[in-house]
Length: 594
Image (cartoon, rainbow, N blue to C red):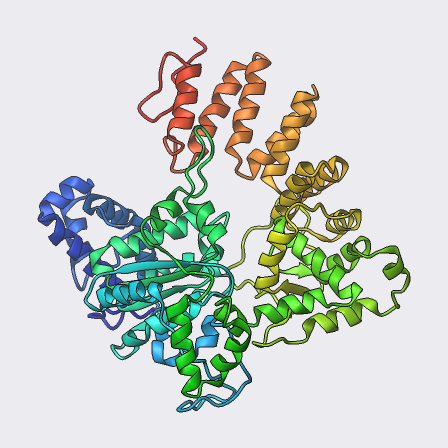
């Protein structure tokens, strides 16, 4: 691993670690003797940790020093691990110089035919249309100036699909390219995993590129940790300057910034804090001034803008037209019956919570009941092949209504085998992704509709991801498709969904089937469900097994986010109400059964 602070060429990670500790020591204005007292370490141990030719300090030493100096413990432990492995000198810091990036590799929507851009040696580079600055560009430019001046900033653009968010970010960072800044787009093996693995390695003068930030901040397992890591990156002076740029659809921004209901769960607390004061709205359409600027560029020879203005000059939706959104909508509305049925099944799957990558077998089986009797009777034997070929044809902007996609393989160290009661993921076959604009169109136009029986049957037959199955269970329940909800819930539980297992435990407990309720609750608890532990404790308490109940309540406290006090008011208030004797200093109940 290469680091900016590279005084020791043999182990740059160790050099970076000692530099961070030294910065912390100076900022706290204490000497090593006082640090030894605060950390509880020996003076020799502390001295060796700072000694340039000393050994790599242990993880215990680094953690104690980080806490005493109020430094990010996780980041310093990651540096210690790298240093202990020799410094990781073979891996570069995340990202590469901005000038080496091609905008479409950063998910700027392609526009127009493939060609050689003027001054570009890259074959197949696409010419971007002239850029029209709008109000949000002024705010972005100010953030870039702050970053160039040494102050870390973060801006997240919130706007509908294909409104120009990503292009705006690309144009904004161009001044930094001439200053030698790098740009990092976390992507492999997944966006969330890449961000979580390497945020602590981000070097100074780096743009962190979080396009479609819901894949980072909304991740069920990693979102809150990513938000915390970004907060640490932005607020630690010695790590700056950095510039974090992201994009979000408005519905995601609203979801992440909404306050939780009293007593309810708060799954986005750190994300909400991170986004506070850092989101910027992008309008759906060009205003009069922007249209006038676009028209002037068109008169000066910009054929792409001139072509778009023939269609979007009235309503101002120039960015969507350039990205191909209107043609995507036309393709959906004019699709053959089989292709339209597949698209509507994909729209329903996405709006009801199924992941980005949709199995082809699921879409084929789900499409059946979207067809009228007449259309169904006229299907040919190769109708599915024809439908997918039709939907793969590119529209203006080089997008397809439904495109074949290959999920990136996981490239991580081996992990222990999953519990025996969870089947391994089935081979899904070809996977497809719905175009963003059509997904958003489906969320709006199909919102009041409930999918037909073939959709639920296909989901039960082909889907295996626990989150997909659990989301569809809730959708079926809300749509009063109770039998489908029942079967989907059991399938989700079979594939390890803690929500489904906990729900089944509650249902069996209400039905008086204590044995089944306990079995489901134990499975949910084994997969990390604190609520399941509390349910088990309540069941044991009602059965008169006070000692076992207390043990489970203590487990629930320990499993809470951040340790015994992590759930804050929820668990503390629960314990205080149940045990008037109070809580011990660790936030656990005192003996209530004495």
